[in-house]
Length: 249
Image (cartoon, rainbow, N blue to C red; front, side, top):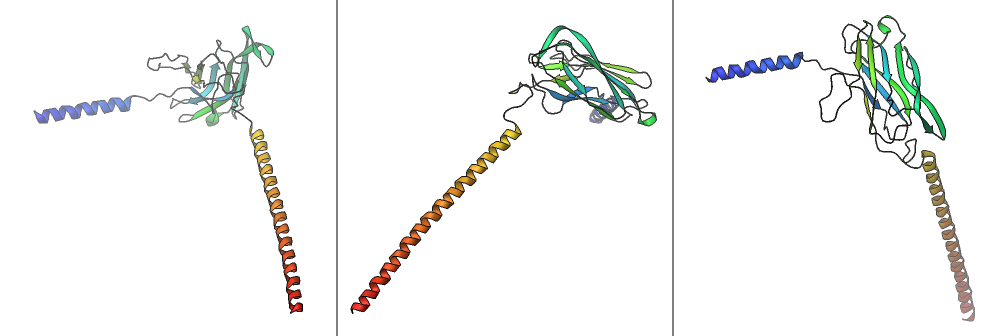
């Protein structure tokens, strides 16, 4: 019985290991900030696109921007071998930005590979980051959901458009989601005085310290000078008195 039990356990372990090995570890299009993405501020975010295929290259990426929280400023960073196209749409409700009324916002950014052969697009076994500067980030949301469409050179299309629901497992094709952090002190994400201001303060402090040290040195020199004069005068007086005593005697 013991031998049979051990055999059964070994067989079950072998089956489970086969299942684990054969189960693919799917990567998906995601978005992460370079630093912090503070509410009300600006941020640079990277859309990370892995190639999940062994025999095809990713040659196109389309990212749709949220319409419930439109972003007035969207600027993609140039990437060698890729062409970026920015699409804007009219807003149902204008935005206020730096005292100006914004009537349209970016609704989509499309990247298309422009290379050729093995240098075109994201090849199997690689990934590509697509950086974008965005803002101003909303102050009334904890996250932004983007919908992405990944196209391969064999015409296959993968839609990463399913939002993550709280308390539920990750969907099969999750949409890239950017988590927002607490608002900073100012609209550009600064938390206090600028580096230049801090540098000026340090220089002022150093100058004040140097001035104080110089003043202390001058005072000390003056005191020592007066003490020297007093000692010298006392020495002269002592010499005169001593001479008189000798003459008298």
